[in-house]
Amino acid sequence: MKKLNYKHTISACFVGYIVQAIVCNFAPLLFVGWNKEFNISLVQLTSIITVTFFTQIVVDLIATKYADKVGYKNCLLISHGCSFLGFVLLAILPYTVKNVFAGIMASVMLYSIGSGLLEVLISPVVESCPTSNKAGAMSLLHSFYCWGSVLVIGASTLYMAVFGRENWRYLSYIWAGLALLNGIFFYFVPIKEPTKEDAKRDSKLFKSKFFYIAIILMICAGAAELAMSQWASTFAENGLHVSKTVGDLAGPMAFAILMGTGRVIFSKVSNKINIKKYLCMSAVVCIIAYLMAGCAKNPIVSLIGCAMCGLAVSAMWPGTISLSTDILKSGSTMLFGILALSGDVGCTMGPTLIGYITNLYHGDFKKGLLFAIMFPVIILISILGINKKKVR
Image (cartoon, rainbow, N blue to C red):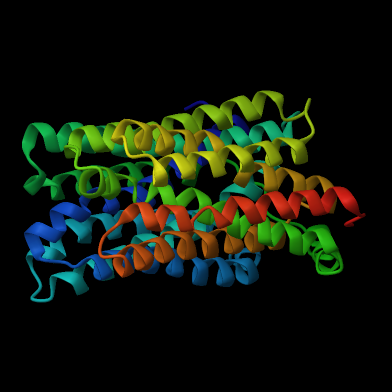
């Protein structure tokens, strides 16, 4: 067997982000079906999103402190094991326990533990690999989250169109298999473990003004991204009254394709551009996209807004990480862990607020999406603040 090198490690990290994308995007595609099959309410569906990312937040917090001690490789093996078991149980528990909602929640929590570990660990693992363009590698890494979203949305849409929505659980077994295989792959690839020098740099983080700006940017980046991606399928089907197949392809799948494309573009130009100006431009486009989705009376224009939002948010998460590692001169677990924690706070807050506001307005998703404009606005203001003063 040919000895594996760090190129294989980066490949395993790419697939790891695909696994995380499946964790974040698979359940929302089933919301309308679960509502009809199990009579799960909009508030309960919203809580599934909340629990997904709240679990990741808790895991982010724990992993930030203990991942160095447990070891990157051990944590990555645990993460894939949890993802595998979570998807398997998601296919089994709703049909074997009396409380269907509790069964779904238990499964969601288990695979969300795996996702939380992936979120904290994969970025520093890639950062530690010998590459010439760190910002480009980071953006390309995050593009695989988008391609994973395209995979799960496209494959799930095609599967349910052919075999019926009621047979969704067999898809869960397929995603479980992918998590298992990548976990085995991670067992064999080389991984550079953290050093004592990384720990020394951690103490300087909390003294930097930019560190706290980065936290705000990550919260709003996660909120702006997930507020749209988590509800796009349901918004298209229930709010715009298009078929599930059309809604999934023109809504969340188009969102994911444009977000992935935007991240690939960013990976190619990140070492040639001013990242702060790029993030400002992204925030402005995001505001326009949310206005199109929330205000347009024509469903086609609304769906274009949903898709365009994917391009707008593409650079927000990896761009903030690249900006942080450049300004703070750190690639430690602590930095990536806190940024991941902040991003997951936004991922929880964004779609949760949209869900509750939509419920407050009796199911009017347009009202909920308009509320989400606040997130790119805060990003724009925060970036402009960086330009006005020294932040180190």
